[in-house]
Length: 393
Image (cartoon, rainbow, N blue to C red):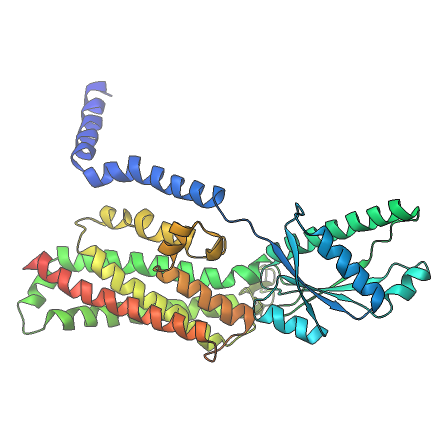
């Protein structure tokens, strides 16, 4: 073994990287940018106030409780605010369904009688049921406030603090829904987009490097026809991928024990409130956009490594800003403006609306998501055609 030869090989690698500015940027600049972006998002998220809709079925005693809650929430550190009084439980559910509140509290008619009889009263708390973590945080903040009020009342009257029993209900998914049920739309959007982008970018690069694209340009086939043809070809496999991913997320197949193999399950069987067909179409539109984006960006790359270098520049920011980890409306104003032009934002929003809230094409927001995703896919088809002309001519 020769140390001289080892150092010679190492020097060759170092010199190769020194001449590759894009790789140096990937090593030193991009990690700093992504880390700074992540820190910016986490530290500068807007404070969230838990908005409570009250329903009073307990008469005057219930109104006194609502007044005490309203007074206690003024400047409360828990960030709770009573925003409205609904006339019925159904009206409160409608408010949550329309996004006008984070939880609803129903004070029962038997509340005062239970307290007089020394029983802990039951209070129904309704949450949207689309995000267990957010719902749990809102419920925890409300319970903490109720415990504080009960303690203050007991100290003032010399009695015993009576903390009500919380009966939790949901509007959309069931109260037993877990994080996987909420993350399913994200899996469908992000993983499909990520892998389709890589597949298209690398495959189209091989077509260019192998000379196939240049030979096609020497035929009567136009550049638009080339881009659309490649898009349809890659889009076929992207659609198959979305079908497989959608079925795996929504369905479940129990496989019995086979000889020495134990029984096992294929599929996640997550809860979905809306149409699987609509969810599938949204994911397909996003994947077709990834196809046209991969064709467009691959014209700026000369090696497969350079295709991979686009991932932290194109895919990772969409994961951070597209509503996957935190709501877009909690981002700083500048980042929220950036998020509003990202396809992932509209795909995640549409898939969550369909799968978690049961929305359909009658929802204006879902229609907007479809239109924007289709427009983005078409835009990159046009850009890809123009870029091919510059690259090969």
